[in-house]
Amino acid sequence: MISGYAFPAGFVWGVATAAYQIEGAAREEGRGESIWDRFCRRPGAVERGDTGDIACDHYHRWRSDLDLIKKLGATSYRFSIAWPRVFPDGKGAANPRGVDFYRRLVEGLRERGIAPMATLYHWDLPQKLEDKGGWRSRETADRFAEFARAMYRALGDGVAYWATHNEPWCAAFLGHWHGLHAPGERDLKTALVVAHHLLYSHGLALKAHRASGVKGQIGIVLNLAPNEPASATEADRVAARASDGHANRWFLDPVFHGRYPEDVVHEYERLVGPLDFIKDGDLAVASQPIDFLGVNYYSPRIVRAAPQLPLGWELARSDTGPEIAGAGWEVMPDGLTRLLIRLRDDYGSPRMYVTENGCGYEEGRSADGNVHDERRITYLRAHLAAASQAIAKGVDLRGYYLWSLLDNFEWAFGYRIRFGIVYVDFATQRRLPKDSFAFYARVIEQNGIEAPAPG
Image 1 (cartoon, rainbow, N blue to C red):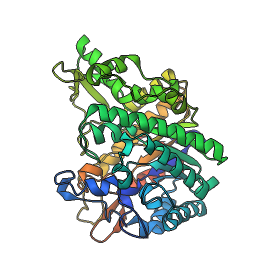
Image 2: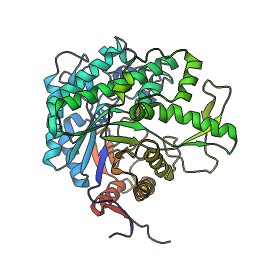
Image 3: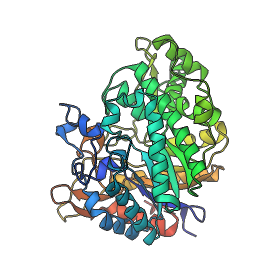
Image 4: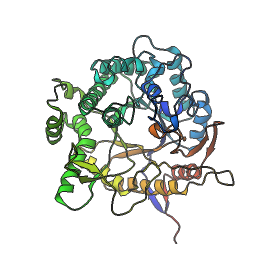
C-alpha cells in the first residue's frame, strides 16, 4: 500500500489524443478534406497560420507511438477516427486505406495489451458534408450513423470502449456561435440547431451499436465544469446557475433525462424564438441508456452577472488567485471532485471515466536537453488526488485518461501551447518523454499517487 492516494483494482489508466491533432497525412491515401483543413486556411483563425497537415505525423509513426504508450504502462488509449479519412465525401463507399489504418491501429494496441477507446467524432466533419449544410442539416445525423455502423463492422470487438462524440458543446458553440472553432460561424440559433443534431446523432449511433452486436461499451464524452459565482451576490449566483444550464445541463439533461432544462429553454426562446428544430421523438433517441459518461475536465467556470449581454452573464477570473495554465485556464483541482459528485447525485450515479484532464504551457527543452515540466506534474498530482477523493465519496469512476500523450496541434492555439507528456520537435518529429511521463508511469505502476515529500 502506497502512502498517498490509492485507486481501486482494475482502474483504467489511459492517455488520449485526437485524429486531426496528431495524424497529419492530410492529403494522403484517399483522405478527404475536413472542416478543420478549411478553417485553418482562414486568415487569423489559428495562431501563426498553423495547420494539422503534418501535426505529429502519427499516420506514419503510429507503431513507435504505441510503443511509447506501452512503455508508459497505460492500460488504455483513447484516439479518434477521422471521418474524412474513412469517408472522404462523408458518405458513399468507404476508403479502404483509411479503414485499414484504424484496423491496424486497433490490432497494434491489442498486441501490446492496451485497450482501445475509439471516439467517432472529434470535430473533423468532412467538408463535403459541411458544403451541404453540415451539422445544421438533420441529414448529417443520418450520415454519422452510417459512419458509425461502418466502424463497428470494421473494428468489431477489438474496441473496448466507443465514444460517439467528443465535447459537442465545443463543436456547437465554439464552432457556430463564437466562431473560434471550425467552421467559424457566429449565430446562436445555428449553434442550438447543431447541438441538437449532435445529440440526436449520438442516439442514432448508440442505437446502431446496440443493433450491431459489438461487445464494447459505448458512451459520450462531454466537457463539464462546476460553475462558480464570482461573488456571494444573488445576481452572481443566478448567473452561475444560468451558465451551468448553458455549458452542462443542455447536454446532460437530454442524455440522462430525455429533456432539455426548462429554464434554459426559456432563455434561448427569448433570444432566438421557438426551438422548432426539435422533432417529436428526438430526445427519446438521444436519451437511450449509455454504458459510461466520459468527463473532460480542465478548469472551473467562474461566472458573474452581466445584464448587458445576451445571456445575462459572463465568465470572469476567480478572486482567490489560483494558478493560470498556459492556455489561460484557472487551475482548481477540487473542482473535479465536486463535479464528479454532482454528476453522481443529479444523474443517477453513472459509470464514469475522466476522458481528458491535463494542462498546456509554452515550454521547451532545458540546457540538458530534457523537458522538466514540474508544473504539469503538480497539476496532475492534484487532479489525480481529486479523482481519488471522489471515488472515496462513492463516485463510480472507472478510469482516467491524461490529455495528452503528445504535444500536438491544439486547435486555435496552433502549436504554441503544449499539452503532451511527450515533447515533439515538430521540425524533426523526434519524440522525447518529459518528466511528467516518468511521473505518470509511476502512478500507473503503483495504481496510486505517492504522498509528496515533507517540507
